[in-house]
Image 1 (cartoon, rainbow, N blue to C red):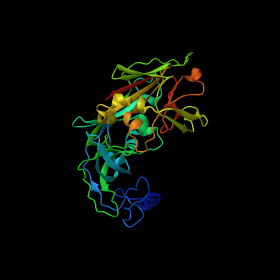
Image 2 (cartoon, rainbow, N blue to C red):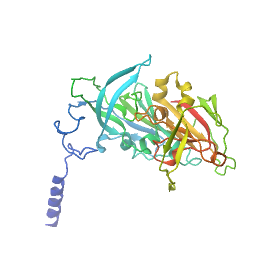
Image 3 (cartoon, one colour):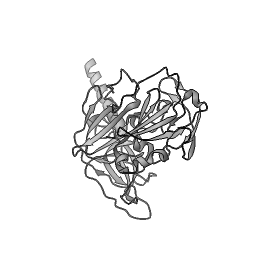
Image 4 (cartoon, one colour):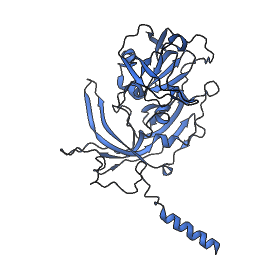
Length: 354
């Protein structure tokens, strides 16, 4: 009798849950389609389903392997899709709502195991390569996926729908296969159709010695290195670039709250853009910047994360109140959630493409 009661209770509870084919929406909690006559401008058109393929995670993770999509809910982003063509003109494709699997969600169960963890513990020097079977690839920093203010902005989209204006009729082109969509990007250089492999890597292009007891943190110059070649030097005392000022709530990964300092200094873009001008689209698609302090501490940023932002908020080389004590420049990027991504004693910016 007891078994019968337990079985009946389990059946009753199961009847209260949404069925496997009717998962709640990852953002709203809704279990049905949005009402096309409701308030959302983004849900007034029919979705086009995109064909998926097998997807595998490799690299510096505890257990590489295939991703089982049945274990994940879907999320949504909206995106105005455009690129700059060879003549520098904007080529607009369309405005879309994408639904699919967040890279945050997909990678979360694949626990990071850095190959350089014994010498450098923080995950600030990690990045992600996404490839398809044709050998095309795009690159994201680990911070873009896991350590920023806005989570779930990079999707592998499985549904695509127009975002229609209300005065004119549009029918933007649709894809046939799933693709990577980076909703934080201004231009769609990091779109990748039919992704099949995700590779997790820590920076290993160059060795930087860690010195936690640095007696003289002052760095008179910042080297600009591109693919192992010294291409330029930023003179910390004479750098010429427009200044910006940001207020912050500084919060570290280890020690938490560090007050509310203000950071001011020259914008980074004018100091490095000449080195990125040639093949600019490729730099935005697969470019990485390793930002290194004199003490060997380093951060990885994708080039798009630095300079291809839909919010158009860009990093600065902040000048501290006491440069002799804490090094002349600190790279400060307002998009970073953690203070650990604000490298002080700045001595080198190492740019490369994967």
